[in-house]
Amino acid sequence: MMRLRRWVLLAGVMLAASPLLQAAHPAVSREMAGVWLPDSKRSDRTPAQWPLRPEAAAAREKWLAEYGPVDPTIDDANASCIAEAMPWPARLIAQYPFEVLFTQDRVTVFYEVFGSVRRIPLGAARNTFEALPTAMGRSIGRWEGDTLVVETDMIRREGAGQPSGNPPISNARRIVERWSLGKDEAGNKQLRNEITIIDRVVLTEPVKMTMRYKWSPDIAVGEYLCQQDIWDQNLQGSPSTVPWRN
Amino acid sequence: MRVALWPLDRLLLASAAGLFWLTAAAAAPPDISGTWLPVESLSTPWPQPLPLTGAARQRYAAFDPDRDEPASYCMPLGTPRNTLSGASALEVLQTEDRVYFVFQPNLLNAETRRVYLDKPLPAADPDRLPTWLGTSVGRWQGETLEVQTAELEPQSILNGNGLSHSGNLRVNERWRLARDARLGRVLVDEMVLDDPQTFTAPLRLKRVFAWAPDARLAEGQCSERLWIDQIWRHRLREHAAARKAGAR
Image 1 (cartoon, chains in turn purple, cyan):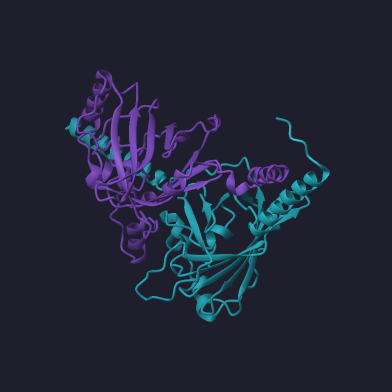
Image 2: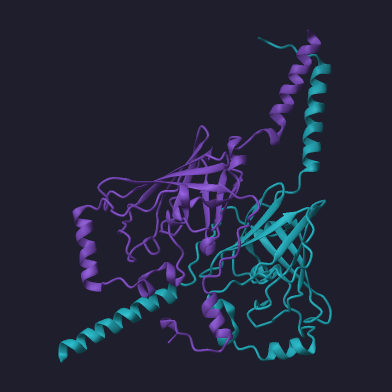
């Protein structure tokens, strides 16, 4: 009996002492890590109609009256290489991969599109010093069982759809994402992201869309050189046709 | 339940736990993850004169920053300039099989160098295009991370003075932790640039980064200034046209 107790004690001490066995995340994080591609066939599209508050709809009409019609070649921030703001990189259906990386107390997402890097501290308090809105916003995450819940605010408006035809957004915009693993009907591993856009200034109710991504272990996140055309024109010595270089 | 421990038990437990920790520590590579700030005063300057080949010297003399600086067109700094420039904080992320070096220079886009551990550089393939960040592999040799980078885009330059390189540039680095009397914990990168088409002898440079756990990498938007300029100019032209139309 004494000998058994000794071994039990020893095993307990080793378990407690092992840094390798003190997992920072649930085991599901190992399955979530890696490279994913949008599964466009199985993902929701951006809603055609947004539940705009009357004052937001009026502001939009006023903007269109003053500055419209929207010319995507001029007015679209993304077409001018301004990185897409959240949640657009997450709801992209074009085939740009992204990589999810779990390290101590943090999730990092590397989007190929615009080369954006998104940092999601887990279980941390909000950093009140990061006051300026950014494209990736300010995210914190937490685990609810096997679901990773990510809340994001402080999202910049440029590159977030306005004024290129999507609904306006306010500084109060907040996004809640629920990431979970599943399988598609063919049995392939799938990452699911239920995105809820909350904007009490602009929207009468939250807008929800569910994205699905394909496990893509053989794909690497590549370089995204948005300004390549301008650089190539310069190398070729031809005068640029881009308005800002006239 | 109270468990009585004999002296032999205590000795056994302490020894086993200690041995286990020592074994784990010996097997694990050093933790270089976190945020680091470049320290110019501890870094080696570019040698003068540079050991350039004749062709490289001609290219260097002909450099026109208005025409030939990729960063002015929001193109990446590229490897190894992102590491050498001192223009950005560095964030290191580590996993069992990769090390990530993330740079986000002010007003430029993020650049993420991925170093794949314990893999050879891929065999040369003319169908594979060079990239601005190159292909990097590495391995831990004791406390030092050895990194090899190849397949680098020759359109990138090595510094702001227009020092160019060929597509055959090989970058060999040795990353290790050290202590500085003033700054404390530092990360040292000893770099060798090997490019016989550019340098008459391999070029050796050192860069030092100080541990800065509270530093945050800011989000850059290189095109922002250009975009705002574009929008404003367009709108100003519209308003000017409207005024002219109203005056007629």
